[in-house]
Image (tube, rainbow, N blue to C red):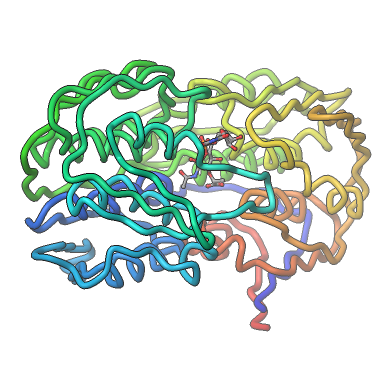
Length: 418
Ligand code: EPZ
């Protein structure tokens, strides 16, 4: 297994461009199942989860083709299989996003239940309850969920909590239902708004994406479309946190400042300088860092996917930072690894108290999930000496060419093949 070897401390400086958003790409790829016409997606990041979704779609009969840096997808005709097998779903939970489009267009779907993951139990009860509310017959057996419906029927459904995947699955199901669907207490992430943009280009009638209530008037069929995926706010935010915590000066190009509001506010609070100009976000870490509390929450709250990276910064800040994780119940696995590097953190329930500043020293550490590994990379950049991060396959799931981008900002990062 590959690992990273990082020499620190490093001051990150320069310009870096955000890649396309992994979490906008995955539902957009699944959306191609809703039409027999070609869907062309641009700015898909070259990360492993995109390859896994592509393999799943091909398994479901979708013809895929690389065309000039974009991906052309065509789910024409009657496919030979409506099943998302365990072998694929176990490597990527987002495979469950095929459920809504499959049952909506083909009347049948059999999808392996994703099971839990490192950061939490992550049930899909809301996805299933929502599909049942639209008339799908849901059956669980042998680790699979089977959904059947001659044609889904519009209806009203309220999510128990704002769920990103649940909102996306139900939106994709409702666009081909008979009649109107109203979804309440929806997630409002920018990735959901981007999916709605694509679906509308395909001919869907959707209102309110990005707000708690989304209204979808079903269509008999959808057409093809061309769509450019939005920039990755989580990838971009990771580099900006890196700038602030290494006393650096990084300009992030191609990102949407509006999608990063809570992070930019917090970086201002800890003493970094944030400038917005010409669609770019510049962060300078030229002041000593001050502690600031963070509570993760669904958008527009502070993203849980930046919590770990922010914790790396908090270890270097003057004072005690309280970091409350409210979205996932087991998302502090980076804490013992940071402690190996010299951080002082104690966790009670869903609150981590980070005592700073603590000088970090290079150490061998282990990545446990995608964002925890990004946290360890940032800590290694600020630490003195060499850090070796094992299991970086977690990083490769969601960060495009990370070592190259970091090197372009002055970092000493080496990928060691395992
Ligand atoms: C999406 O996951 C993202 N993944 C996650 O990013 C992100 O952390 C999460 O949203 C929250 O922002 C993708 O978009 C592919 P949720 P998702 O449904 O859709 C509970 C990364 O690092 N819940 O919004 O799975 C759930 O357990 C990944 O890129 C139910 O209880 O998240 C969690 O506590 C990690 N029942 C909360 O809701 C359900 O049916 C939010 O989960 C659905 C969710």
